[in-house]
Length: 97
Image (tube, rainbow, N blue to C red; front, side, top):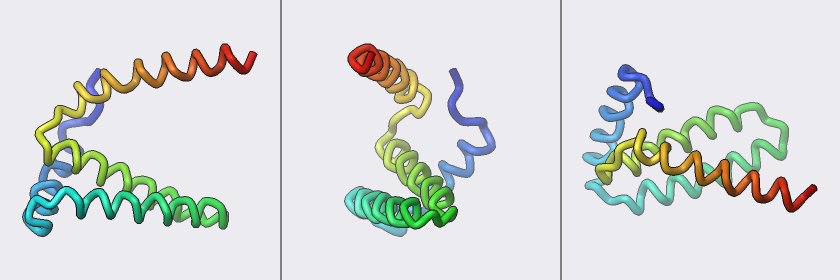
């Protein structure tokens, strides 16, 4: 399964390269931004502020940046991740029944 279309991947790679340059490859800065975005998403979501969706997309970009900056292949990561989610959710669903 291909997760990202080529044009999106290329833009994401460009953003990641710029971010790494600006942040001197300090991954802790990305992690802090991720944490800040989670807090903002939570606040906006609970306030019924639809801007939470844009902040959620920002968080997704930051997550992709972290992976790409560390040489991870997005398709490989998601092809490992999605089956894990599927298995865990199916197990939890069985426990609820």
